[in-house]
Length: 369
Image 1: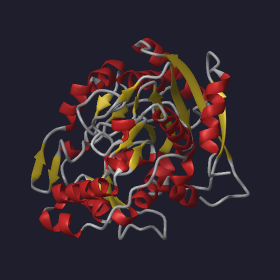
Image 2: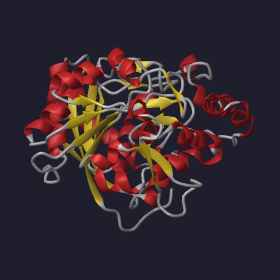
Image 3: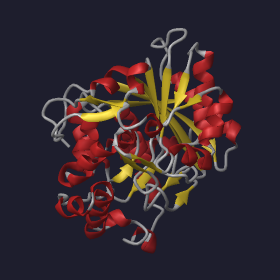
């Protein structure tokens, strides 16, 4: 990663939760970090807010976003004066097939299986799953100039109808891209023809992930990124894998998606140090193998676009996940989203163990200073 001389400060608020924390403890920590990350001056009474979790499958957190964290965010936004609060996403290709002629599968059913749908509704939100509005309920938005995208991205029309977006990802390994955090969550917005382009251009899929976050809608409306990370999907991913529950878990929030992902990726790397042997082999951790990661991307392209797409997809080049400096998604994000942020950790609530903060920020600073 290239160095930068004018780094802007970005606060990442962190809260500690003990292992096997209760839903109420996760909710309390989520509220603390969200409030500590800013004053919510962007929110006016009656504004409509879209909460974007990750519901790529029907598997429970951390394969998908924490229902407790989403419920807490809905409640906090209502207290701050929000009007309508919508919660939604669109599932992954392994669980949903979207075509102009119709849809097979249901993100609503996936969300119900995870418990997220019930948690969101009980907290007072409305559910909105992009495929249910139909193929034509998408609009074209464009990434910043100089991107690897050949054209615009087809995004759900509902994003034009809301005032603000709150992104709520999780902390996970990913079989193709190495990790899936805040920046990668943008794929959930994409209509399936856009997802096909994304996977067909596997040679630059990491860069395209970051570039997709530069569409004007997200730049103008995304206010906050919040993750529960008391559980981490440490290998395989995104739908399944080894779940680690560290003795001290984290919940984090930032107004900057790049700062959030710096800390979230550092947390993933730090926890993956406990893995060894078979846990890091290609059958348990596909992204550890160039052959497997590339073949998996060809397979996804085929699921999206048929045999021709599978055969003609570009070669995906995996990346090691030993340090921040090796991550191509963040490297490109720094280039297109305002540079390398100077992360300022803000401890919210009971103080974190100083050794943990030192370790976390040490990993977060590798290769970016």
